[in-house]
Structure formats: structure tokens, C-alpha cells
Length: 82
Image: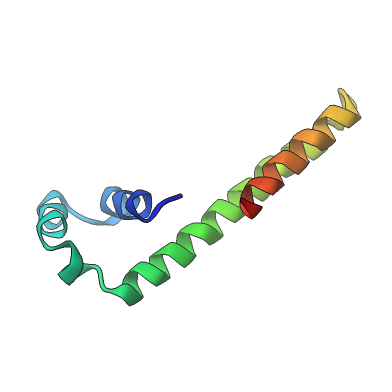
């Protein structure tokens, strides 16, 4: 997830169209370094939680094929280490 991805998601989630235009025009002034750092940390926490939830679904699917479901769960968890 890039910084631009995080900014775009913040605009979609919290900010009105008018404010989004201001951010586009005055990106550096509006989004301070601290704000971006906090927003990035939050986005990473959300992504990690979602990855773990997906991996648990794969873990629980072991009644179909234990080896494949374990490999899928490991692959999902590994995405957080990339």
C-alpha cells in the first residue's frame, strides 16, 4: 500500500469533495508529516487485521485439503512481511 493509496482512501472515507480539491491543490500544507505518519500506521494496522482474518478463513478450510489451506494461510500472512 503506497502513500498515495492511503491518501486516496482517506479522501474517500472522511473528506468531502470540496476538501478533497483543497488537498489536491495544497497537498503538502494540509497533510502534515505527522498526519501522514499516523494515517499510514492506521492503514497498516487495518490491513494486518484483515490479512489475519483472511488467513483464519483459510486455516478453517482445512476440512477440504489441509495442506492447501495451510499454504494459502501462510501466503496471506506473508503479504504483511513484503
